[in-house]
Image 1: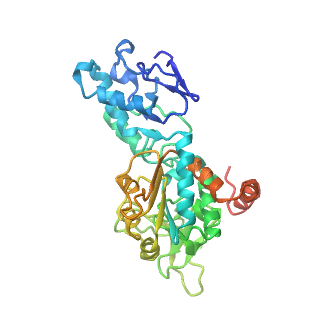
Image 2: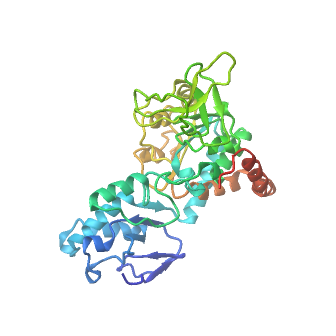
Image 3: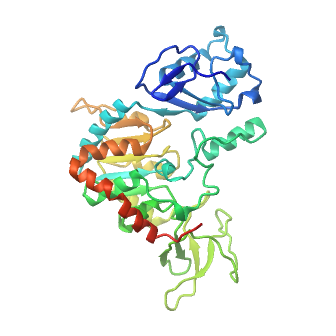
Length: 397
């Protein structure tokens, strides 16, 4: 495909009819079938698709393009309509810097005036650490759906891996968002964290066990199937089955035993990983603590989550009414309308919706919360914190 004509803050708008060089606009990134798979002719295309099927647009151009696909008189080829429909499933949205900074100011005020602020986190806060997400342009489920539709795997592009395949968890380190949440917790501005992630980065960042519910388990934790004792390891817990009889879970049909035994005196129970697989029930204790804090909250920060996995996603609605909610991720969620509701008494918007990367937003939020000298000192301390993280993880080459 030909070179795209419009440059937008180092981002090229691939819509051929754009024709405007405007900086600082919202953008949309998509990934669809490779043009060669659909037989799309470049001369008939409305988009300068990359060979991989990637494309970037002004958000307004993306809206115009998708509207054209609904009107047959606009002459969009059947091949490109197919590509655009697929692209809509993967679309990731990014607010411009000006809007992110503006929303960060509002969010920081919401945090500082909250009496019981909690965070609800998903895979999106860990993508910058090297963990793959599940939806979006290169998400694990997106790749599987696309491969099924085309009959062959698509070519992977970019640094984000498909799901967690090939990721060395021991080498992962907390992101800016992980550290910001830990700092807010230490300052008393954040009361609790509810996480759907299993990468262990929240705990590694310094969040105490009694301040977090890891609803789907922790890859560095194992527990005794007999007495319930829990152990935190410096390595990712995997099944090592020498001299241990495997035991398939009745729900997920996967063996959770790790090969080690409980270290408590008088207990010889087998240790199991704590990962919640599809079909498994959530553990009562972390779910109960999560629900307790969810019911108390007057502000919930939903970061890097699509809010699609139940029953965890139901927690974000349990807070004081009207529910005050920030959602920051790259794709729309079913809970977005809650962010735009108007308080009948104050006549102001109760929540905030930011499209984009959590690290981008949280950097701006911390600028608003911490004085400049304190912010600089905290950010400069990351190198020392990295040394501490390294001590807590077993080195893996």
